[in-house]
Length: 214
Ligand SMILES: *[C@@H]1O[C@H](CO)[C@@H](O)[C@H](O)[C@H]1NC(C)=O
Ligand SMILES: [Ca+2]
Image 1 (spheres, rainbow, N blue to C red):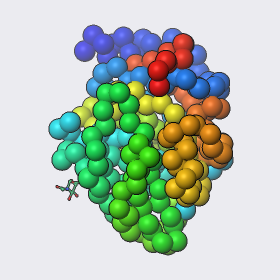
Image 2: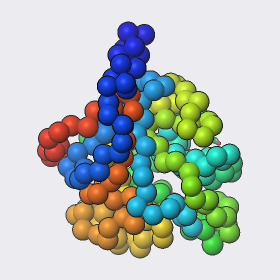
Image 3: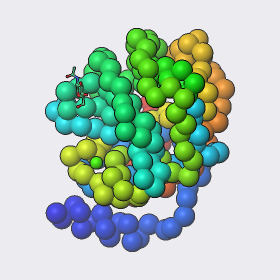
Image 4: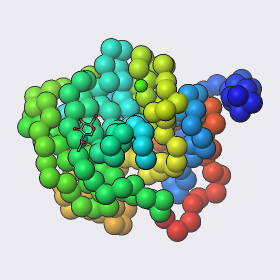
């Protein structure tokens, strides 16, 4: 509870407004389970993309729907949900030395795959023909059950997220492997870690020095 109080004080003392600077070599560190810490990301263009608890990995929510949410479930499977329906994948565990995860979904066919450290899962079909709606909020760290709020501590992310990229098309397998292997690829046209616009709320650390050895 004392920590929560500190968070509130921190919140007040943090100047309003978005930070926009290069995150290259840095990451957002979520230090503890909270229902107050999150990072809101501002896309470079509108989003219109064709342990023993649930963990939200990525959430994009519009007013009434969880448009595009990536979860690690209670049972350890990984899921992508698009405004309701979801598909589930059994994948290698995320590990403490860092894992590279990529999710691809193609609107027309609904083909969905998860990639972990450059290897692709089998593909499944999710909502062929569905369209993701614009004007939502992308959030790391919390799962909003309403627009911009109603978080649950038990679903929060604890750990470190870095190198987030998003494109409005499905990248070829060789490009996805290059993202993992040597970081030489096209700029993310929705999110690009090298020029990300974001705003942290609560207890989220952005180290000032680049991480080494990653
Ligand atoms: C894991 O949990 C999800 C979400 O509750 C469920 O849909 C899926 O069938 C489960 N998978 C296994 C292998 O138990
Ligand atoms: Ca929730």
